[in-house]
Image: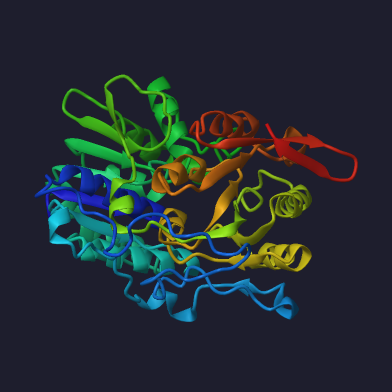
Length: 430
């Protein structure tokens, strides 16, 4: 392995490692352009129509809307998603537009999760990373008994020799455990959702690293056992006289003292994909706030239905952690075509087809999609989370954090405000 080592556990983390690598490589000419033949945003297609963009058939991200009789169907990734199907980034064939940047020497270690949807997306992202010249090592870090010991043994040597380590989730217990094995001279943290905002704030205040959606009422027995690991990892995730720390992010973060913040503009995504075909309707972006215990399921279902009616949405892009039962319920009750993307949404949207309006709940995409879709004419809107949607067991920090995500969204993003009514939540542009 190499002196630069990245640990990723989700498709978005790997996407942002690719974005970071793109910024590190010196250009050998003008930045690579969109695929040959893509001169600008495609002509609009009729409202509700879904057309697969060229070279996208292998992504499996979007399928033709089902016939009315199948309106409750849930479109899922094929069973072969975990088999490592190839998804290659289209490149420009126009030499006059300049050559692609060579990738820096970097080894990406995929600490494979057990969730099939995450594994499928990671397989496809791993292929894209290999196409960019990165070395990808697939580590079955959670593959049954002995997996942890085997992983630590296999990674101990490259960890000790790594000059720079890149991590996507500083809250990950696995990453924290790995960081206790060594003290990297240079550390880079890339985005894995809005948790980057919380990490920056907590490190800056010297606090214990706790995910924003977890109740902070004390340490459970498992956390008590891991407390020494977490304490040491927190020190390793902060700058010292012998270590630099960089946050590579597209999010507005508090800049902790001694930490360098580098903007992620999604330049690699824009250079490799699109511009997309645009449909005449709207698309909704799902969230796992119900699954993480933050939002009440009944409120969520009702608001999704209202958003679909208000904006004429035809598709619902599911978060990879959303439950099959919830997605089936949404499909049956709203008639939306539920799509489980096989790549991160930024790539799916850039490849297209995508609606002229994309409506999301507070999440990373309200910051990333305007960057990935810059110049395409797609409008992004965010629907705020009202206090009455929250479950009684939600973390006391949840409302403030989600409001912060909405309030700091890019200025190109429309804010949707909600007011609780007796029967339903009415949504309007704010």
